[in-house]
Image (cartoon, rainbow, N blue to C red; front, top):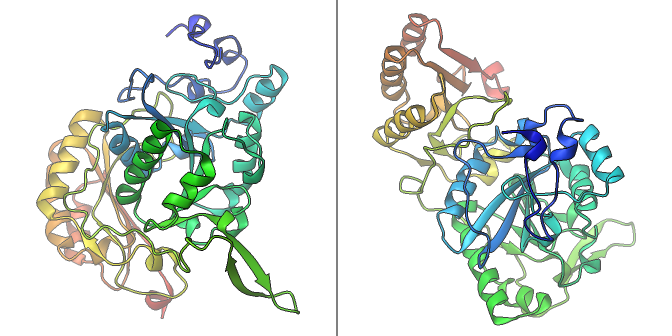
Length: 385
């Protein structure tokens, strides 16, 4: 697409970005229009900005984005659009040109969206959240945002320890996003249609499983400055927030038609989630605690998802996603079959997160026959001992 004519101004909410794209490194970070991108008429739909608080190349490598983007956009009443942290050169130009941060799908200013949702994958991205809000022209603190600004939510593994961001985020979603996010957005859409104000809406939804509204709680400290407890400021708020958990992932929708970036990303390959959770229970592992219990997909399901995804994307590498790949109950059966299928199509098979104490030497013998396959062994404390 000709960058000079890239977007035209379609409404007061749209941001004209074409004029500055030839002045930044990797303009494909900001143009959208990838193969697999969802295009809808935004009018009459609840508009959700899915924000990954890091560069495009990193965010587009996150399979959770593809999963939730696909799941939300299958609902006709929602439109999920993407937002990423602009690189420093783009951020400087946006500030100098007074251009607010925009979504990739429609180039709409983020402050005009209904909901802005951050995925919290690692703590080092927290400062990027502040930068994104600043570039979008959205007040940093929740208490300073009026009804004219989007509802700011956050989820992901770091949402299990939400307090560092408690003053900035309106609602934390804790647990499996496939179960929680569409139901939450439906409640937002219903409240918007009914004209319910923000505070009343938060009081209405705070008792939902997996919902934590930090403004309804106040920390109480001991004399030595350590945290004693949290005092509820609203009687309807629960004493504890229970995470939302899927009973099974076998029948949960998993994308096979992915968005394909124009530029190389950190993980540029097809990915299929084998199972969620971990049986090990290592106390030093955050993921092993928060993603339990173990829920597996059947080998037949994994093979079908992998085949459909490779066919629709054209990727020449397939990776199996899990916390500990070799702990899959039918690991040897699945991987040897996939290796043969991948070899026939000249596709590399990547086996990450293998444990030394459960690794199959039959798999090693098979993988040596095919030079394009690879594996990653990650010794932990038990393996080293």
